[in-house]
Amino acid sequence: MKSLAIGTLLVLLLLPACVFAANSVVNMSHYDLMRPDFVAMANEGIVGVIHEATFPRLERDARYYERQQAALAAGLLWGAYHYGDATNPIGQADHFMKSVASARSSIRPEESGKRHGVLLVLDFEKNSHYPGGTMSVAQAVTFVERVKERTGKYPGLYCSEYRLRQMLYGPGATSAHRQILTNCWLWIANYHAEPRNTAPWRTWHMWQYCGDGKCGLRPRSLFPKSIANIRKAERNVFRGDNIALQAFWRENAWYP
Image (cartoon, rainbow, N blue to C red; front, side, top):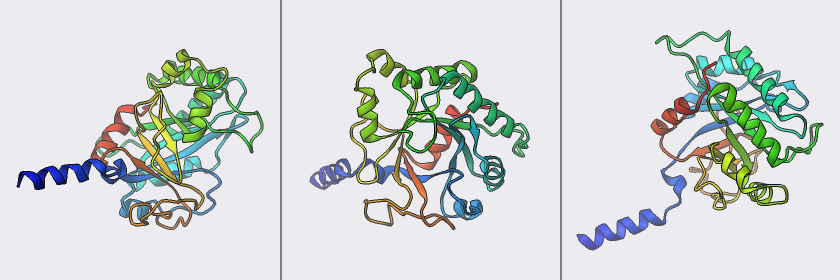
């Protein structure tokens, strides 16, 4: 009996972290042209949606508000991200928060009287298709500090695994920059394997394993590429179960 217990423990330790995680977050933007069925998403196990709110240069995502209303009506948690560029990071942060707050102000509270929080994220990837250039590490630090100053919360930081290491340990990045950015929770992308190189974070909080139909992971039962009526979805795993995800969202959300 003792040897069986030890063997079971060893098997559990060798399993990837995603086996014990919740595959229940979808991210979207105005590039998703369909009308998403958020009720179907909820019925298929999705708990939260993170949508682009703003992008270069100081633009608002035209589909953000209507989708926020529909997702909240379906009982889903809501998040917003800003796609960063190389222009004034304080101006970007202020525009992002103003856009999120103005959309949020017309949303009715839950029946319990509680306000709906918004999980905030800085999309810190290479800017290859918007004007304004690519945000530097120093600019990212200024952006997240501005968000913390005005909301009391650090946003999440989204980046691919390769680019995260390239930027945070490349020219212009300092240990002070890295220390500040670790106040943000880490949302990391890797379409081929569970992320391992997460320094200076100990580990990832959320992992995007699929985007634009790209996903090299199997089995499909654990790593589906679609959800509801979205065939090529952007899907994410949270490190923890759905109860932990809901608690994480409440703790890190902004309540404008």
